[in-house]
Length: 143
Image 1 (cartoon, one colour):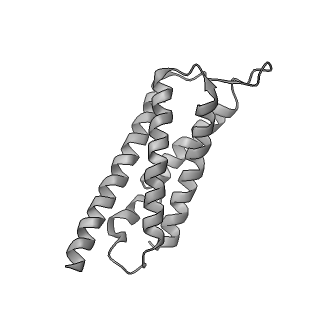
Image 2: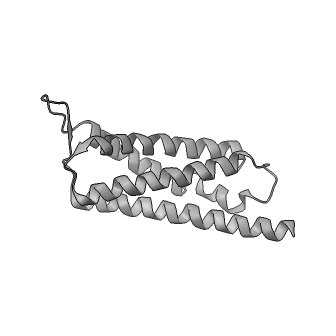
Image 3: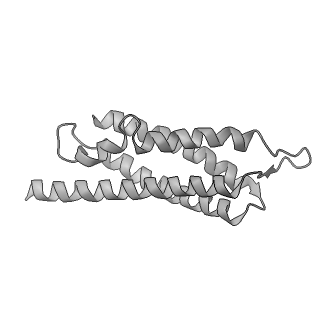
């Protein structure tokens, strides 16, 4: 997979993640599970920006993209995560708007929050492992 395709996949995930983060940030009196989802999503955004920056500067024939490209493969981890967030966004935006103050209120089950948190943690781990594997591969290739 070429760097441009990987980068566009990462950008798509970043956009949806940032949308979810913005809604979670506005949520009043969120349960601790959702606060954890918010924090983990923010951490994932940082990692995804690092990944995007590293991929964008690479040659499509270079050794760097061996493992990282698997993250952005069709139906791969980034696609699965993006799909989960796209299911979540209507639940967030379609509920809880109060006329007085227009404050978001969260009506979300603990199970849904834990499932999302698990997906966020999984994608973070996969991105970190892929980056480490590619770093090792490049280090060996350059020596």
